[in-house]
Length: 373
Ligand SMILES: Cc1cc2nc3c(=O)[nH]c(=O)nc-3n(C[C@H](O)[C@H](O)[C@H](O)COP(=O)(O)O)c2cc1C
Image (cartoon, rainbow, N blue to C red):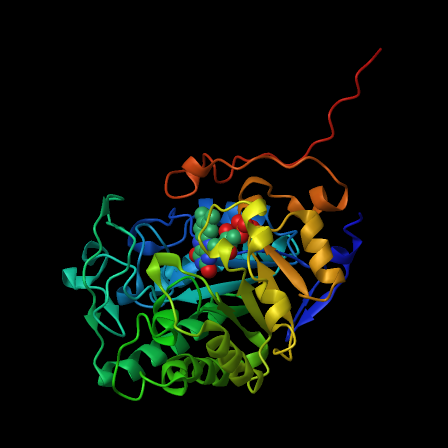
């Protein structure tokens, strides 16, 4: 089959894409000191500028929001200057880039947080995954501190400021990390949210935190520059909800009122990174399930091949497809897909942390030299 459907333009709010191949947000843990992006990070993103849109790695909105060592932030001037070099490099190559703004909540460790404070969460429920310390050591997760009601408006304001900082640093928009068991999803799902105030209990209350952030960020930068990422049915870090389909239908209907640039859904099985296409075949298809519920452009991610991506567009399950691991190993992924060129395999050992190896040294496709007779 052809992959032509991936190579038609698409409008996401204020951003127009030349193709429908998106670079998924990918935490690579290679920021510099003080969580400042480096020249190496700029090279990595610039190499991938032929994507229809680049979504940056999850970027901490505040010192309290960190969850991984050597991950970048967007709350200091130095970080904004570092990111400006990234956005300039991507734009110079004709690309587009939005920042994924994130608060990790309970998925963190006190060694990463100011004054060794405990990670925060809606309720004192620890994740089922080990944590990674500042020194990249795996340790058992700590029991997070439940946020006081009075603290929550401050976190909403921090998301708003992070979005403004991202725009000032040259990003074309922002994506809210509402997926993969981060703080927003911890509020959404009743397995992690056991609050009894206006942010817990009914689904209306659990969705309040997300909707307050969406409203605050939209007012600051325009909802046509805001996307939201969600992972319905995902169970990363042990997160779960007692009735996910009803919950996510409710959330997506509420988001319709904000006229977002896009909604970005992760396929359920793919939230637990590393699953194969075979497993993906059996998973409930979030894009197909929620396409009729959402009014705006829909991005779908997880375990896509070029062929299944083109099929999803053809069937109108999604408007664009985000690729994660394939973009790690193939900086020129759109060209490889368009011309049916072989794909380089990714090396999982170099996903997180380290240097240029496994980061900026994956090859661009070069036509093999003709073999002379
Ligand atoms: C190394 C790595 C880092 C990731 N970091 C993030 C992240 O920062 N934010 C996020 O929302 N998802 C993150 N993900 C999930 C990806 O965006 C994507 O949903 C997942 O890899 C499945 O897509 P794929 O099968 O095309 O790789 C990460 C995945 C990988 C492999």
